[in-house]
Image (cartoon, rainbow, N blue to C red; front, side, top):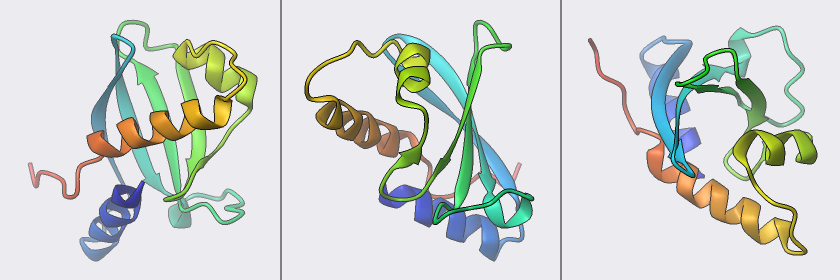
Length: 113
């Protein structure tokens, strides 16, 4: 997920702390709040951003995860339940596919408006 670093560097260069973008997965639309962990009082454990996925149909339905360019920090069951990912023997492959899809939605810059 190389675009995480690209967007984070853009934010830092322009002195922004957060941005948001849209993400679609399994027919559900999410707003993703993308926050620089340097600006939050959270332990980063090697992660650089906090991602909060907000279901656009049910805004109370949210999931926050720490992330870096390699993976997310999450509770596997909670993550699977939130995104409707069925249990499978090869969950590692499923998560890699998820990361690849997610990376394609991450913008490299943000609109100045």
